[in-house]
Length: 436
Image 1 (cartoon, helix red, strand yellow):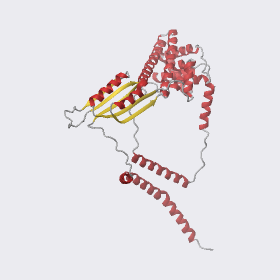
Image 2 (spheres, rainbow, N blue to C red; image 1 turned 180 degrees about the horizontal axis):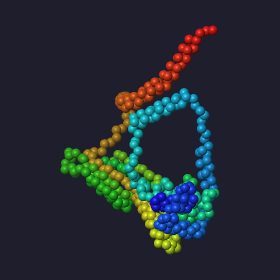
Image 3 (cartoon, helix red, strand yellow; image 1 turned 45 degrees about the vertical axis):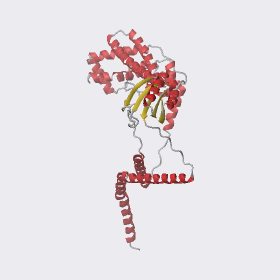
Image 4 (cartoon, helix red, strand yellow; image 1 turned 90 degrees about the vertical axis):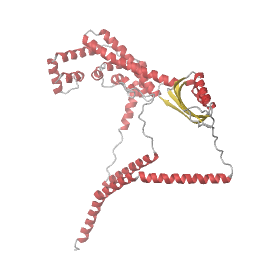
């Protein structure tokens, strides 16, 4: 056994989780290796110091929430297996499943389902240590160990797997535990929801400079700021020259003035497209906030243990763990500040197009002949679109139809045809028997 393998399994050896042969090898190596034996002794001393720390009461209602969660998990396992199906039923179900999957693939390719966007949004969580989904579960790890019926009085059983972090989280006070318990039970802490709002507007105008200046004036009026701006094209020297200028603006507007700013843009030009979206990050925000509280409490506990440490090895290990905790605190603090800024200042993207004249929408025909003519035109357009879609469907479905044809031929040649031949032979054998 080498030193690396021994050090990786010291925690499991202390908790008695190794088999007899492996434990004997650990004892032999610890007796021979001075470095590993010193690390083992230092861990035992730190464990002894942590074991003397006072226990912290569990959050109010924690046992009831844990019991309800265990009951829900138990109900999921109550479903019993179905009875045995004969060979025909299984083959029929498999064929139906293949047809359903093939149909779904065909429809999906024809309908143009949007591909999953893997690009990160502005409010995406960072990829540093500690994921958001497991933040609340990690923060409540110590509480789960203490509330388990078979767990010991202290939290030493968690020491081998999570190191100093498990000890500090197990002793977190009531306020962090209340937030964590609410998240684990599926609820949310009462308070203002965290919503990142954004908008996109497309505007046509005959007075390009005036419209851009009015938009910038409204941004200043509502105490916003310009994130980026771009103007393309050359100004017109004469009226007959084509209007080809375009402005692309990305601005940030305070959350309280967002709706007023959007409604006011209708006065600077003709709005041809307007989209307003909102992303609710309340759950993610609460997860990171609870994780940050737990890490700060963990930092305080590590500082307390560090002040009592005497051995140099203990001090080095504690300072290393303290550095990791502080790094995560800075990471989550930066994430919350970024979210707060995105929430307080909504992003508005504006495209301004210069045109010769703003076209008015055609009025709806009011006479019966005009309605008949327009209805006939719509029917012709619909028929043409239907024929186009039918042609696209026919061409696109060729690979799937070929696959289904091969699958059907394989099922017929391997399963159905041999069965039919055996049945025919049995009938022939019965018909050839002599009559007594």
